[in-house]
Length: 187
Image 1 (tube, one colour):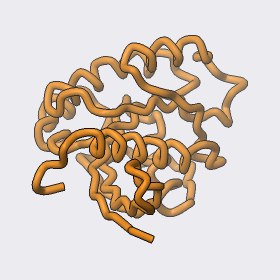
Image 2: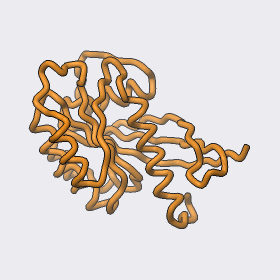
Image 3: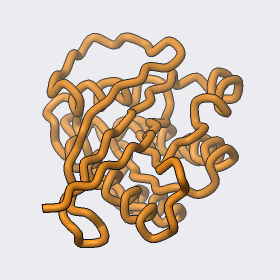
């Protein structure tokens, strides 16, 4: 069987305390820590995932570099060029229990697009384990995702619900996007 390799940079965006770091920790380490520790600056993690090659030629090994950024707006503006440069996809994370965090994703996404152009997005409504405190429903998420021609998922870094699936789905969308166009020499 033919095995191809691909590297991709993925960024998580969203306001402070929506669960970006916890989602990465769940995905990379299959672990959860409910102590909130604010991300200072950026943190980079890596994980390899496997997908079917979009051209049907076998297996694709994806080396995913995952960038986590602190959720403060001023920081985003200050470092967006360096942080978003080279990103091939983003996970736009909101907190299901705070409606405002979904509304704020537009600014984050526009910040990314200003550096990368349009790239695949996956919307994540995190903290679905706190569904009894939800301020967001499926209708709002459908509307937000549709505006960016994206999909969305309800996730929980605490329980692991849909976390692996979210990263896998984004990786596959990026791979499909890159196979659809002629690859650059460095890809």
